[in-house]
Figure (cartoon, rainbow, N blue to C red):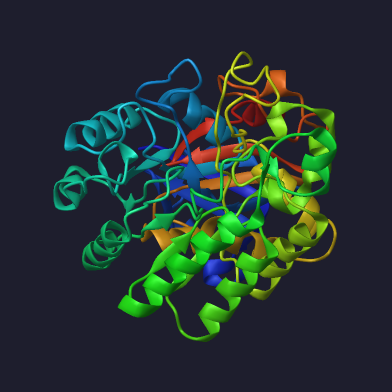
Length: 426
């Protein structure tokens, strides 16, 4: 019998309206009643630490299969564990794309030995080309948990509608990369900084047009849609208004959109280039407002690993930045340390709500549920050193920033997957 007793932690479990100091018992991979504690429990002294449900990241690129020099399922999940992420949603833009049952089965099989629960997104169209729909029923049977052509907006609106209808039948979400491909194509946010650098800009309207389409489809066909990586004030306003009208829309934004702006691009460093791009201070404030007023349901990383060689050319490098190891600390620094949000409210955005969107049994410390949790020090300050991060790629936009709060231990399925040194230290 495998048993862990965590003693003296501040326990924050918003799903059960709990915020108190106490103990947590884990037995055989699940949370158990304290009354069942035996003498054989492995004891963790958690005084001064906060215990919360493991984080659920709705937007992760593991690069496996096809680009495992950037990341793979095992290393990606090590990075997740170091950031307190115990469940993640793996996007389909691998090589080949996740458009067959065989690719789904490959990912799920390899993930059996990983340090986080991996949920797979199936492609809406074959090879993400918007030319031919995939067999969604077969993908679901193989084990997908969501649908998306992430990174490649579904150009054929009929295919998008059919996917949204089928996903509703199967009780899985469609996650939408909102972008008008004909307006997009630039490298950074279109505006003052792009003009100053002489780099082709990507207008906010490209994202906003895509957001408007997906909301319209959800409203017209009475089916849910989840909007990925919201970054503009206009998209925030549209999602807010749609929710007021009863449209079944949920949304996420990323830690980089609430902490950083397009001013970072003046460094001419491709680690600050992602899609959607870093926007203006007005947009950053809108993302924070959206999290506070409930318009934006979740914080997700869009963890996108690239090698140093890939990122060496500022203009021609691929878009994307890693984020799982820094997501909690960055979000905590912006939202909780500042007093804008409580830790309980942050865990709703990073664990409870993502679990609901994905329809998975996570996001709480309830007895009988899988023992996925994180212990963190709310007061520890640390400076992000890319070389000390756990994934293969180091392209973080938070490098050299000092963040507040640090993950000290992550437990996934009752197994300590990060921070075993805490046992010896205490």
